[in-house]
Image 1: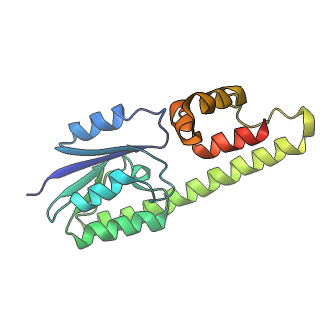
Image 2: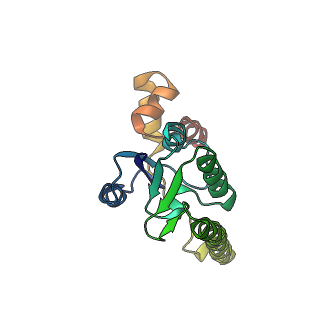
Image 3: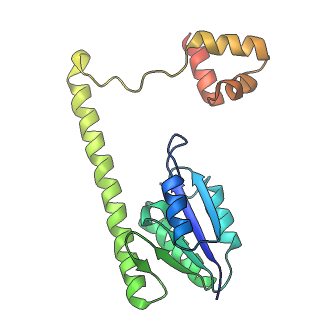
Length: 185
């Protein structure tokens, strides 16, 4: 009998992993890999990569929901294939998926396609809403997200710290944001 390993993910740093962590622990997971990264791509998801490297034959990966593992059918099927090659099963708590059976593998594949479809529909609706708001012109309530930091604060940080990279780190923003803001003002 292998190890029961949990994987949890939320999309942004402002979200909490507590609910997933509790559910995974309750499901018997003895080791957890948790991260705060978007699930639209596998790139940059260090904990997913670490988990895939860590697992051994006979282990079982447990996730609370399928979309925590990945949002695209291709990524889900690639992860599943990697796990299968290693002799690792996958269990999804909320959708009651268990790839240790042929029926479970079929259900997993169907749900992964539905998950990608939902993501694409959501993006399409969002784009339609943005386009409609922009079409209204100057009276439109859509103005984008308000800036979280002022140009003056960026300039002051660069002057005090002496580097743009250091200012970005101190302010908790990307270097690209520092350059963009300095170019604006």
